[in-house]
Length: 269
Image 1 (cartoon, rainbow, N blue to C red):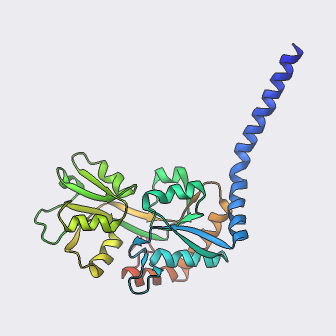
Image 2: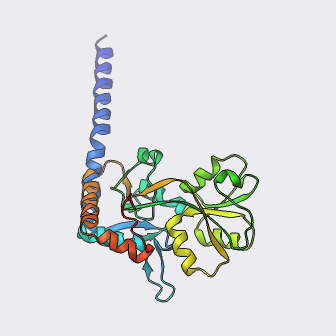
């Protein structure tokens, strides 16, 4: 009897310990992320590096540039850290945040309810929407995704665009690791349309020599934020403070006009 009581007490103590760890770990982890970044002196940031005008290599200099890159440098400077960009295919960007390979993803990450269950996000720093891209000689008229039933639609693998396309029955969805392969297949007629970010489409049409044009905007407007691991309140608060100040002093608006030609830093534009 006495031994059974002792075993019961040990199990109860172990259970309490596990519960305490589950409660305290997120707070400790939050402090660790900020402390680790400061100890390193480096903020590790996941970007695709192939997604103009957000993050890409300048063809003339070979240097990484773009709207997201400037926002990332702004945040890193506010945290008194050196930005270290980690090139990652889109489908692996959020897993890199989860695993701790990077501290944050600043690569036009759209905030969704599903993602908010797995990650914390900063306040939005960009607002955009979904838009179709078609060939210049396309004669078909697409007003919505439903009009693409029976046709091939290209999207980035693991993206919200892919998710939305797959929700419409009858569309043959083709997933690509990055935008260039997607658009090349569109230009060569291997797919009928592509779905991506409207800000990217606007920039692309001004700088690409591919025979493509803008299609209609589809779906709801999107909010874009910095994705970080859950349980890092200090890091999130610091990022929010930096972005809020950048919006208030006009920095985000200036960067937006530079890269997009419009002010995409506000939900009302």
